[in-house]
Image (spheres, rainbow, N blue to C red):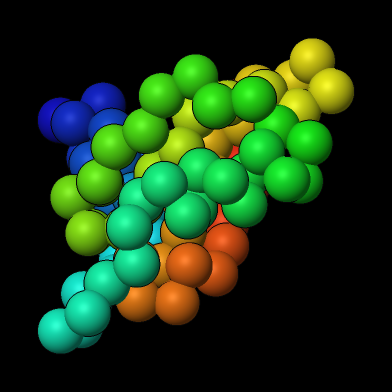
Length: 85
């Protein structure tokens, strides 16, 4: 019973740490290629991309030999978060 309780507590506490940003697409969103171009202009090489469950553009790529996961707002094209993966 203690193990179950501890596992539940850790799962609840870890969830916000693992959460991805969430976006609300407007009437006119920027094309994903603009976010990919911004990543490349910052010195990155795009490996792949997707639209995450929160409707943000999510780009996977490398900068200076390090892997990154970068989130962009589809409305503005602004970078929201950069995570070294």
